Length: 180
Image 1 (cartoon, rainbow, N blue to C red):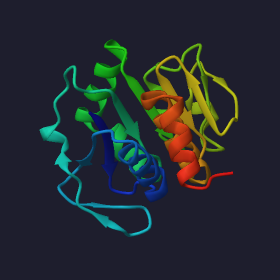
Image 2: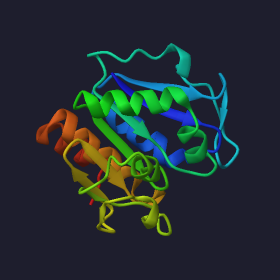
Image 3: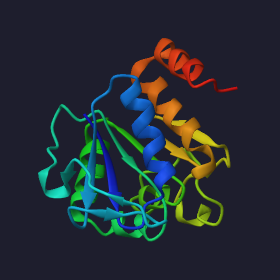
Image 4: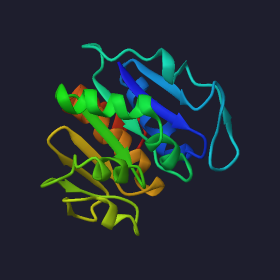
């Protein structure tokens, strides 16, 4: 199970590109509404996620959580007790945690990036407490994946696919999308 948390003000591309890539690769991806049953993106797109945050299960079926950026989406994710519990669960149980754009700041505030390589949207570097901020489009260190911005959302989704599904699935997906 891969949970993608969506809060009011999330960045659409940063959520939908990874959802699309992972579902095309055959993974079970569940979108989770944070703060209500219907969510409005940072650009006014209304989304009805699969579950509300109260319905998630934190158990061995969880492979990864994904935290899209956007404002005020990132702030809304960070203020959710359920999102905080999911992050803590994944960190404690060696599960993947992926965050893009401003969302890596949530991990930085929790001290999860201490001594790790990470990247984020320009201007949020100081929020990545203890991290070696690389500025790379996508950065993987241990079980934490961070990405810079909406402009690398597809690359982020493809990297998550590679990590969870392997090189062959990544190549097949990459080639089917005619990525260069």
